[in-house]
Length: 254
Ligand SMILES: [Fe+2]
Image (cartoon, rainbow, N blue to C red; front, side, top):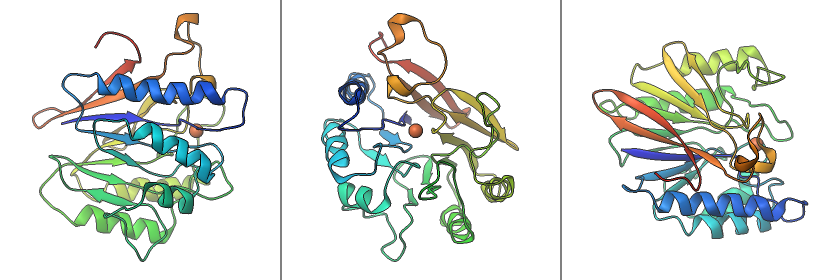
């Protein structure tokens, strides 16, 4: 199984770099479409748009509609649950009785659990009691497959950058970390949000952070010819070895 992870496209319509962000997103989808073999799915780990606006989501949806693989999305701190839900509906896997955008995808050799770490109005992540119990339910709903968990905010201290903590409090992040260890079938955690590449662990579970697709918002130093080349991650799952992650530079030979 091959998962293409993209993140932090921050589509905006009225910023000086709005066209660049749209191009970065479109070029990334085109690059994924040209891969052989084609990834089984694309997962967008949030901050799809910059202001949570319906017209921004319409632009994002039009770009993602060109993807040849199914795309699954979640909320980042810049997203708006209601507008995102509206833009990507119908969502057969969402709980109609809950506003949180958390769900599991069961159609592949690895179960994929998408979490909602949005705390509206804050750039930091939250994970309340309700979401914790929903995560445990999602983990327990199937007992045979390995599980990869996707969430916008990384659930470990990312020591690269000015602030290593990306949740509101250390206690919230610790409770989330405990829930992720509820089953030893959770084999990988994939995040975005930090806008630069990083990797770490949640106890025994390997966790990665991918850089942002929007090149104008990317953190870290890159050579001039990289300035307009988005970077994304390809996670390949092998039953014997687990996940191996490749960093792809858009526009280079696969
Ligand atoms: Fe972001």
